[in-house]
Amino acid sequence: MSKTEKTKILKQSEFIAPFAEDFDEEDAEFVWYPYIPRGEYTVLMADGGTGKTTFCCGIASAISNGTALPSNYIDDNPVKGNVLIITGEERGGMLKKQLKACNADLSRINILDCMASEGLTFSEETVLKSVIEKYSPELVIIDPWHCFLGASVDINRVNAVRPVFQKLANIAKNCNCGIILVSHVNKRAQGENANNSATGSTDFINAARSAIKIIFSDEPGEENVRIAVHTKSNHASAGQSLKYKITHQKGMEWIGFSDITRRTLEEAARCKKTPGEIIKKNVDFNSALFDAIQEKAVSDKHINISYDQFKDEFGTYIFETNQPKREIDKLSDKLNAIGIKVTTGKTVNYNKKTRNGFEIYKYL
Image 1 (cartoon, one colour):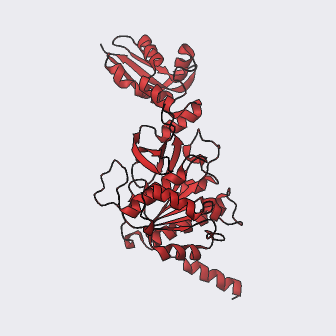
Image 2 (tube, rainbow, N blue to C red):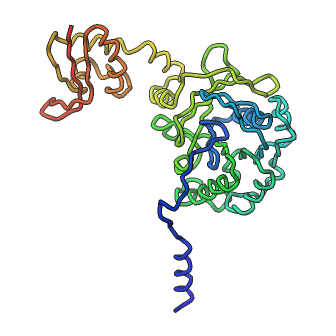
């Protein structure tokens, strides 16, 4: 047997898949429920100057002091412990000022700044793991992540980045900590998927179990307010969006919740509007569609009509820029209040073709 064949057999024997019954069952654990899972990495993305570093300092401060972070879930036992910040852009002295402004316990936060972190890469997972283990953190913040990818890894290729992030997730699991990977954004396909705004291959965000996007508030008088939108959550229902204010000293204070969601961001991108304008529009409801359905309704008669026919009769934008089914479903309660029942998900013939549509029934 040749040396190559022996090596091949040896490598094959390294991959052993136990039976499912041999595994211990696991429940997801969190450093901050439901935003930052333990044993995984969370992506934090935002445009430059939005305040993502300040956001990270606020989280680090809370963990260093054992202070409960905001959530719909009441945490009677908030995580308290060490935080490790690894940065490729910031100096330690500047981060110290921001952490102090957030009232952090500086004795529980270690900083590997842009000078000390030079040469550290995800590819050298043994080195990275030993650095993390040295400080026993509850949370590791890597800002920005692409500084540590390594020169030989193509940031835009799935087959290049996926093994790197699989190793990173394994480090988080083995070190029993959460990891935040801070990401700049690009403008690619943001209307289709809010998570596609993260820099690099889409596999970077696909492999993450949680993702948060920070945006500016567009409400009057809230120039220093930011909103953290939970755009991905695999281990729990997505958390409510959080509002925080950046203080004069570059610290931050939590100021409540926002109704903006991932869907709001995507609709805003498609419509070329601000998230606040989308929220206001959805509250005001689609009165043109409401009136059109009333016009088509006939007492005690079931009327099936396709979405395309409705557009032909009442205009291309009768559903605005939303999915017709979703827009009609939003009006269901209001229509029921005046004796009209609408049922979406119907198959209808129109212009000799089978189309998607809905039923209108006026029972009063």
